[in-house]
Length: 169
Image (tube, rainbow, N blue to C red; front, side, top):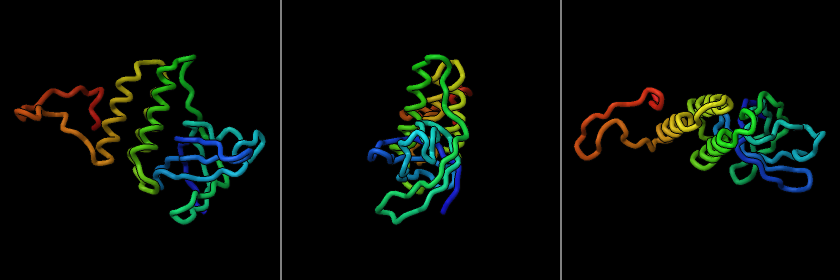
């Protein structure tokens, strides 16, 4: 049994009562798990498995060919964009999609987890989502080893000024 704090980045209904959830944690990276009873309103997970929720989880690691078994999830916080701000909501979904699509199972990225959490906190405030997303994208690319050259001209190798608001450092 493993215990960690994780962010819910994908949820799919599996049966009448179960869900398959993908979580992202600081210690384990991406985790794909079966949450038996995860669709029940009064089940062991209640609202902890909402998309972009942060929760304390307990799970049983299975072999690499099968899903892990999520046994417990307690809600820590929910991503709540201000009012009906669809830009913030969709930006949060985009962060989850990037984490889901560009990271591998059990490949931990502590810095990326912290930056994803920070990005969701900033997106929950009322403001422009573009600098928040750009910063997260740059950190993500750096962490997974795909960072493009952005500090100099690729043709002539002349340095360009950086914007402190979007600098991933």
